[in-house]
Amino acid sequence: MNPSTDSAGASGKGATLSADEVLREFRESGALLEGHFILSSGRRSGAYLQCARVLMEAARAERLCRVLAEKVGAATEGRIDMVVSPAMGGVVVGYEMGRQLGVPAIFFERVDGTFALRRGFEIPDGARCLMVEDVVTTGLSSRECIEAAEMEGAKVVAGCCLADRSGGKANIGVPLVALAVLDIPTYLPDQLPPDLAAIPPVKPGSRGQ
Image 1 (cartoon, one colour):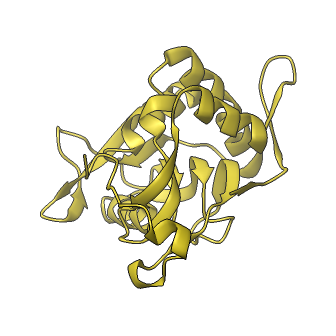
Image 2 (cartoon, helix red, strand yellow):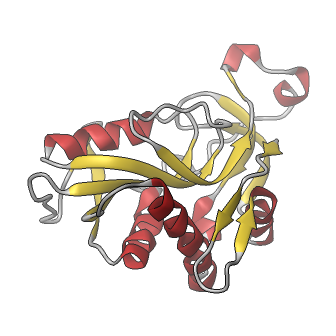
């Protein structure tokens, strides 16, 4: 697992968070897990980022999202009207990003396998939206969320996440701003390296245990 060396500028006293510092936040909160994991895409990995744990302390969530909001502001042009996120992973980080940016934050939920708005959520026609995820691996759920938002009338101008574990290779169809870019290999189930194949797999996260 190789973190990038890019730094993220923070508001306030010019603080920065390097990818190594972001990883330390994950480790200290017990959010960086090692073992043999089945990802939501079906691929396998020797590391898993459980963002629910890194976000469960409000002060840490505020600190990380403040830096991420600064990166988003520097990378995007024009206003952002609303934050949209895929449930479940994007709900907490999406709320905090909305708070940092001073805009409403809503989330999409899967209904019969497809992302949809519930709970009275609506997107004004033409609203400039930021798609917010916790972790991006293949980018599939991000693309599905963006497509669902655009079907509701949004103009999605960018996406962001706490960690892009694809090493910057994930394509979500719009610019992706990550607090940390990590190169964490994933494997097809029939192409596991011997050390990973020797460990019983588990399926963590909101769709697993």
